[in-house]
Length: 301
Image (cartoon, rainbow, N blue to C red; front, side, top):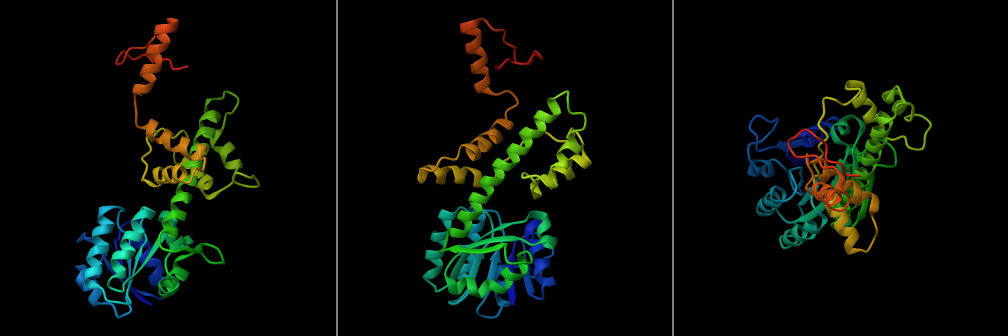
């Protein structure tokens, strides 16, 4: 098939390459002039495609995606389909779909997982939308996903794809936090003399082996004590949305919630909350308190 792809960053450019290797024709557009774009505007991209057109959007979630979808809604015709493959919030999808439906334009939300490895290994795809709209994009889905029967799901109506991807990312938060805590305990113990090899031993035959664990081994191969990294972790939004959805549905998510809050904690070099804990311990028990800027650690236990 021939399709347009908007956003040629790390994910978008690799997806375009995988599609081309699979025999598809991809018309790529990115705002950056030094990108590997094929056209210089959204108008040119739409004009380069034949109806029914499929345009895949891979830009940052939020306003960039909303603006792009709105502009495409002005340029496309009835029967065309827009795919939002970014990490948009699932509640935004129905808004986009409703606006596009007024012109007869279809909308498919598609959560994409695979990172920089997706070009060679394939991408896990989780989509939502009407059957007819998903069917129009299916040849691209079949090429992008990994070989075999798994790696793709039409999860339900519009919004279902991004909801599934959101939960996927929430689980990812929990897994990464567990691996991180396990690493820290191994490194703190005087009994374990070779932490990287201990973790490497888990990658074969154990119940906790995973691709994330393989990536941790790669990171330790490059930097055995991770001294080149700062213990700071940003969150891209999906973890927060997962916790919000859990509250809306009265579903307990203690592990994922804890992992999200641990990321918040990583951004505080000197936690105000822990200052309060230290101050209170000093007030009721006379426990010593380190002073900020004095080089002493504030006791928190």
